[in-house]
Amino acid sequence: MVLLTLVLMATVSLVSAPASFVRVDGPNLVKPDGSKLFIQGTNLGNWLNPEGYMFGLSRTNSAWMIDLMIKEAVGPDFAAEFWRVFKDNYITRKDIEFIASQGANTVRLPFNYKLFTDEDYMGLTKNQDGFARIDSVVEWCRDAGLYLILDMHDCPGGQTGDNIDDGHGYPWLFESKVSQDLFCDIWKRIASRYKDEPVILGYELANEPIAHYFENKDALNLLLEPLYKQAVSAIREVDGNHVILLGGARWNSDFFMFTDWKFDDNIMYTCHRYGGEPTAEAIKDYIDFRDKTQLPMYMGEIGHNTDEWQAQFVKVMKENNIGYTFWPYKKIDNSCMMGITRPEQWDDIVVKFSETPRGTYKEWREARPDQETFRKLLLKYAENSRFENCQRQDGYIRSMGLK
Image (cartoon, rainbow, N blue to C red; front, side):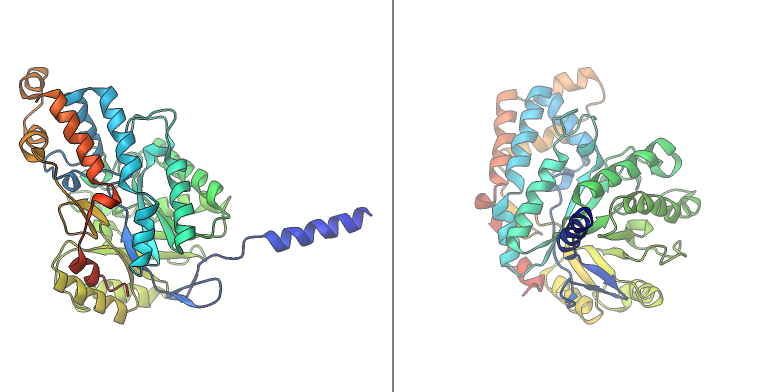
C-alpha cells in the first residue's frame, strides 16, 4: 500500500509539473508546442518606474525627483494618494486587452526594485505592492493570450548612472556588495513566486547597465557578466523553467564584455535602438553577436521616431529574426500606442514648478503654486491616463507591424 501510494504521488507530480514554458532553442525562442515565438509587443513603461518626460517634465526626470517635487508642492500624504490612484489607473485589464487586440504577443513590464523592499517608493514603504501589481498583469496577460517579460528597470544602487535607473548618477550596483546581494535576493524572491507561471516568458535582469559617461567604464563593463552569473545562479536555485534575458552595456548596445555565452542553458540577449538609419547595417553588431553565440537576440526597446522610420525598422527586424517590443505603450501627448491628454494648466503650473530651482527651503516656499490647483491637476493627469480617456495613435500602431 505504501509503495502504491508513492507511485500515485509520483504520477500526480509528473502530471502537474510545469511543462508549458517558452524556451531557448539555438537563435530562436520556442513555444511549448514546438513552434517558434517571434516577440512582438510593447513596454508598460512609466507605470511602475515613473520617468519625467512621460509626464511632460524635463529637469525632474526620475521617479525620486518626481516624488520629491510632488511632496514639495502638496505634501507627502497627498503624494502617497496620487501614486495610489496613478497605479490603479495607468495600466488596467482594458490596456492589456487592447494591446492583444492589436496583434501583440508579448508585453515587457519595467519595474523598480523598491517595489520589493521597505524603502519609500510611490507612496508606500513596508507594505509595497510589487507582487500584487505583477500578479494582476499575469492574470490579465493569461486571459488575453500574451507573454510577459519582467524587467528590473531600476536596480539597487543604480545600474546605469543616469535618470533611467532612478539612482544617483553612477552605477553603484557594480561596486557595492550590499546592492548586489539585494539585487540577487529580489530576483530569487520573484523567481520563487513565479517559477511555475508559464505566462511569464522570462526575467530581464537589469535594464541598460553602465552608461558611457564614466572614465572607468571599461572596468565596470568587466563586472557585468560576473554579476549576471551571480543573479542567474540565485534564480536557478528556485526556478529552472524561465528564460533569463541579459542586456549589454551602453544602453543595451555593447556585448563585447560577454565571453561565457552559454553559462546557462536558457539565456538570451537583449538590445535597444533609438535613432540611426533603419537598416540592417545599423544593427549589424547585434546580428553578428546573435549569429556568433547562436542565442536569441531581442530588441527590448525601439521607437520615439517617425511612423515611416519605425515601419522600416520593423521590416529590418523581421528579416533578421530579432523580436521587439516598442517603448512605450502610453505617455503624455503621443509617440506611443495610447496618448495621455495634458490637463489644462498642466504646463503653466506643474511643469513650471518642476523646472523651477528648488534647492533650498526658501526656494520651495517661493515657488510653491496653489496647492488645491496642483492637487486637482495631478488627479486629472491620473484620470486622463485611464485607457478609456487616452487617445489611440493609429499611425504609430500601424508602424509597429503587429498584424
